[in-house]
Length: 187
Figure (tube, helix red, strand yellow):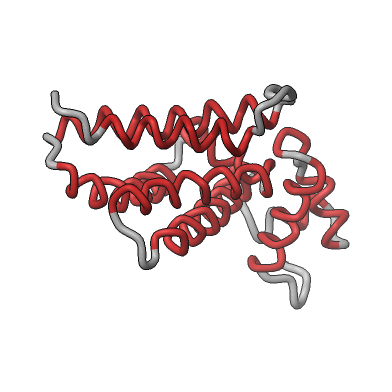
């Protein structure tokens, strides 16, 4: 029987905190049980396995990223919106490194609801791209390039690259503006 008063919300909050503190790769049910002051076997009264908890943490990570991306778009359009999204994405990744790892590893979780939620973030990007008179295929190509550029830059930055001048903020903006400007060029 579950510990009286222990809720799934408490489990999720504790799991999220552990992932943020210890790292995505170091999360364990034993540490989670200890954090919640229950025996590891007791967690199975609330959850079926560590994969379920990881999926829930994944949903939390996606929700918080999506919230930041939506906030960044308010009152903006076109080029400004795309630039704001890129900056919000980078800021989220750098400030939430371990949750970002959860997001990046989502395809390995084999959870369709996580993948569907991840794709929903792209809907906003595609709506913004409507302003550029692109074909459906061109939107897909741009979205892939845009996401790959953001992720690649952030990944390298988080791993200690870009230590020399010029400033990484300037380099990131240069890259994003160049990508956005590619939308304005005639084919």
